[in-house]
Image (cartoon, rainbow, N blue to C red; front, side, top):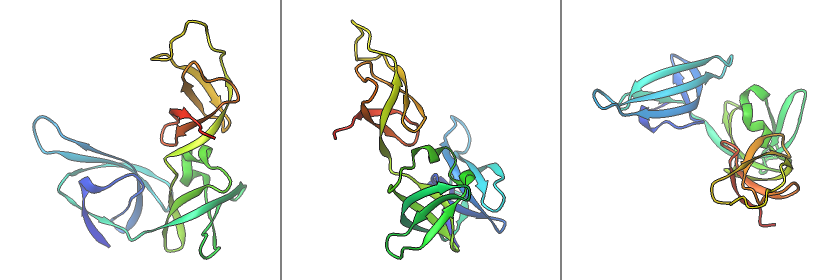
Length: 189
């Protein structure tokens, strides 16, 4: 185990609290006007999925578990979960839908992801920051609408709802952020 300062923890890190492993879901450093700065961590216990919130002084030491981050290729999903393959050893590993959460909507066959592996079990996943998706449903562009600040709702090929500029039409391939599904740009392919 390695001790690290609480303020250095990020989403996806794995920490050991009282002999149990937790994956960090969100980490926020709070600097109040008065008083001591704190780090607010929302975490999920790996063994049973229980979610907890903890606050630490930013200078407090937290034990970080030894986790190997390895590149994997997404293969497919079925009733047993989501299946990934290590491109170097061809070993396959499965993750449950609960462990992946909302990010599962962005998984595409053949996509390269980073899996955090602890003692042979995949415990966290990191997707590429951006993915290319197709707009399957959106309103037609209105005449005279400016492209500067108005956005319209759209449904993407993975079922996620997003807001796109007025010039984007159904069938257009766009780049979106996997963190929140926000529009980045029109795909260049």
